[in-house]
Length: 128
Image (cartoon, rainbow, N blue to C red; front, top):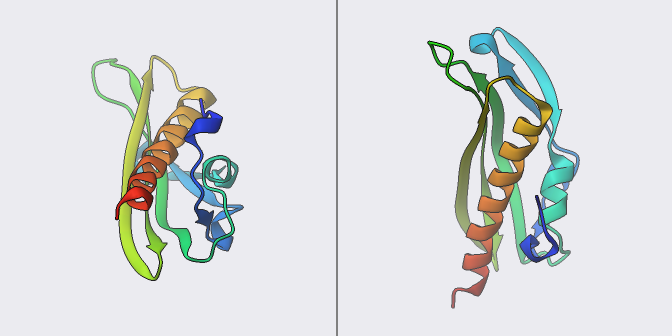
């Protein structure tokens, strides 16, 4: 769950405000779209052009380990954080597991990844 204290005063690139990512199923044979922009917007806010985060790649997928173990829903993203003209790479990769796939698993993986990116960005904001 995203809390008010998780937010970071960094603008999200315009293209990412309404971001839609692909979710791959069954080894990449099927694809579904997942709207992730609202989650990114909950955490990354701001309008200072000197602090912008641009998501360069993101994807979601489901893995089915053998022998009936828990299903995993994965989300990973990478992007460029620009602070005062200097570019920094950020990456995150998270997953949630369960006996059956649920929408909460994907939402949890996306939120965890976004929060990890925000934590990386916040530490860079505070660096001298």
